Length: 162
Image (cartoon, rainbow, N blue to C red; front, side):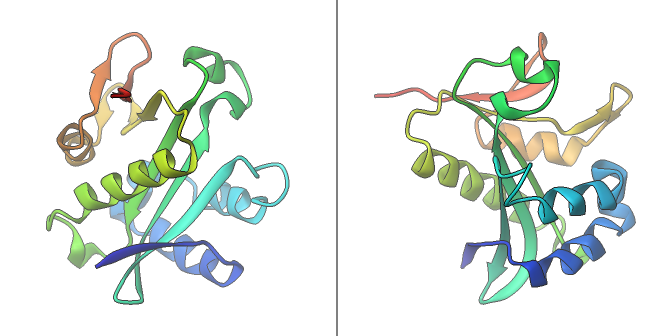
């Protein structure tokens, strides 16, 4: 059973190690930038909510969500209020291709909606640049109800209230 727990200071080096793996770094970029955000989670990056994913109390991945409107710069203006962005990764190469990514996206989306009941949209960006698309991640997002938005270039899941 997969569970989320809030990232602790002791987890940061583990996440850095995961992010330095070639199958992660090709999509996440510089691990030091991510580590700086994690270390600033109680300060300038307090709008980002970081979690470790555990399977039977063993860390297997990392997920985060953030209030899109609080991203510095113009990007924040491209989405309606109450939009939340997500990021996710599996930390162990041996766990790839087993459907775990699909579960991670569902878990983090559920977390966003529980903690932010007024959310109208969840966004994800599985591309580094136009010519480099993370096809596996795109399939995971689509399996979770995300659709490509040509205007923003993001994958979007609109939340409908019934």
